[in-house]
Amino acid sequence: MLNKELVAMLNKQVNFEWYSAYIYLDIYTYYEDLDLNGFANWFRVQAQEERDHAMLFMQYLMNNNERVVLEDIKAPRFDYQDFRRPVENALEHEQAVTASINKIYAEAYAQKDFRTMQFLDWFVKEQGEEEKSTESLLKKYDLFGTDAKGLYLLDSELAARVYAPPSLVL
Image 1 (tube, one colour):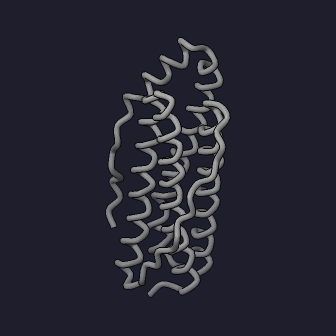
Image 2 (cartoon, rainbow, N blue to C red):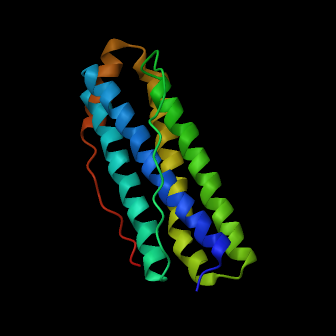
Image 3 (cartoon, rainbow, N blue to C red):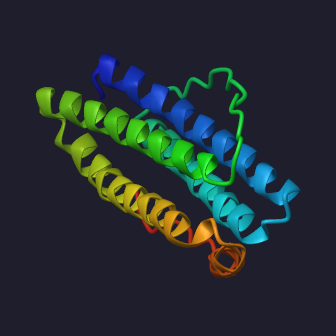
């Protein structure tokens, strides 16, 4: 049986992951409207990943006989004034997700809930990868994105990204 404070934190993370998917869907549509289809694809894949992260947290709660509590998901309210800003927002958001998962991990550690810590290990690693890939995209944009040909090539590179479901087994 999970500690009730930890259950509340895990449920909050479920909703945060759904919100993350909303953010990336918002960015996806922004780039799609501009015909930057590679950037749009990159963020569509991000949205799919976040959806699966939410589902993994939900499944973990259910596997532990805990009720999943879904809350309202607020609409993202960003005003993108250039091509760079959505990527910058995404990096800031990934850092917030990392902080949230670290907070849950710290609580699981304090409760000596080793099963939850083991479950969260995958997310800790995943967040490192998420931040790194978003930072890399931001660096590439800074290097090439302000040049029309560079932006075209970067957009073409991002179009090749494909979705790969997580391999975490619960």
